[in-house]
Image (cartoon, rainbow, N blue to C red; front, side, top):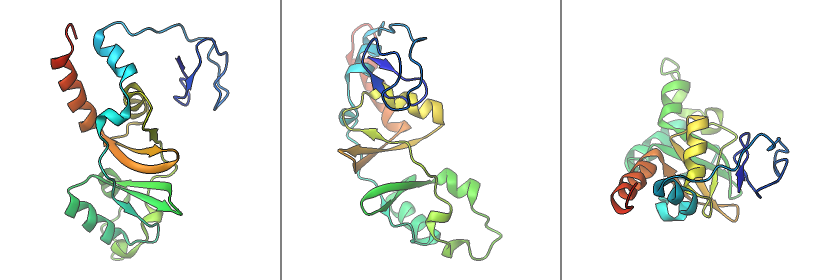
Length: 174
């Protein structure tokens, strides 16, 4: 398996270009997991992280209401959906960086105006290594999880850290 350095797609070993973005894979060597932990990161899937149920909101929901729902759930993000498709994500970081609290109307603005879009996602069957790769490259702390194109959960950096800590304990030689 060769992971495209541009988009993160899994390609068959030996492919010269990525099936998705058509980026070159010719520079990639046969990276083989060296340690037991690396082997598990490539073998274990997102499903094993038990993604949590995400907070789903429509794009027209006011920012103030989204923030109230996030606080009530003690969550760090909301997934914006339209026609059952993920169209954006709004995180606590977005609240800090994109909202102008001096603007008296910020609470009533639709969340679609301040959400992050497009959204990087994962599939339930993706290796955990993909989540780590996407979070590292994009600086993300939350990634929506899809199953056959439908949103089914969310994983966070905390989920990955918990997985790593558990793995270090259970994997001999890790």
